[in-house]
Image (cartoon, rainbow, N blue to C red; front, side, top):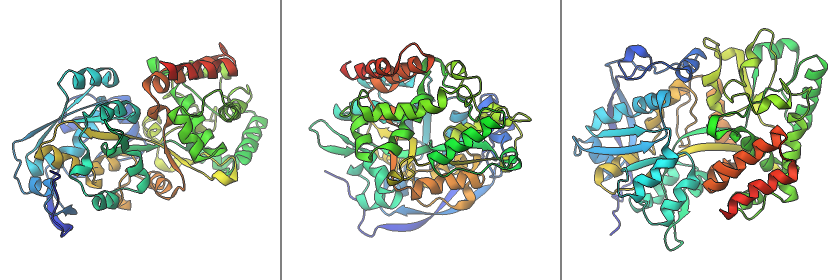
Length: 475
């Protein structure tokens, strides 16, 4: 029988969130400082702005009768909720910091286990009868298989629709709908950390001193690219090397261009395999990308360097003195790879511009959807907590995270750039999830990565590369 919350809706509950969060080595957390962590802190984004050992009293709207309310009243003190996901190193530290206040306020232990091999091992865990209570899927396409087999709990069975609509925009809720065993859609999870991908970064200080103007359309961006080349520099720095995942930055570029050259409906068909990679619509988008990538005057190091340049290193030429390149398209997390100590007022971003005016300037996003495999009251309480902006508070303040849920106070954001990212997502007419993350693994993390890499390296021409990628749908 479906559990119902009391009809009196929401009540205001004073949540006593005991924060003992410090994101540097002096925090006593396990692990050492790494490049990701110091990069974020170095860009002027505070690690965690709460005082160690201080009580932070926050007023949060918690639905009356919910398991979250009961948890905050201490009813599940001493309970343990297991969680498995891909957060490791600095991200794992930030995640643990973001849940610390909840754990201390409720007495629930969220036992998180991170793995770099999450995608490969979560199948074994779940199908072997050792499923975690909650799993974090950065690739919703991977989650769909578990939903189809009936292994995932429908969170709408205990979270009312009106509450979910209060917490998320409709587009996020739509993306959480997945087909269950009888092709009946369920709400497969809740959205947590997200990142905006449709961003072009630049060295603001050098850019302004050079007299360049931020472009608002593709044509303006191409004119800027030509102007920078005429001034003696390549405009763009591009790198797609990422170990076994080499090629994924190329898929992001293609997805952004697809959203700006065809309808959202066609994008959805493409993601589902109904619009093949061999279609002229897709080839047109790849050609648009090639107009920049394959011009030796436009890309730092030329075409041959793209496949061998690590994605994290690709932003660094923007911040030499003088810059060796001027523009870099990447998601919001890239600030973690900026030079240590770089003040936030010395860099900025603009939206990846529109190409065809009728499609506007969509927001391509990625995100983590938390799915529930075991149904117990304390697990429900944790899932309900993850729908709140408070569950990301310390992470938002540390920078590099765009909250998908509504109601995040402006003063939580590390700087104006971060706040504007959130505003961009909240106001975009069209929002679509990273296409490769939605496609089956054989394509999205398989032939799509490899085919784009082969195309960029020159080992395959356009037709051969698109056929290679399309072959993944048959696996």
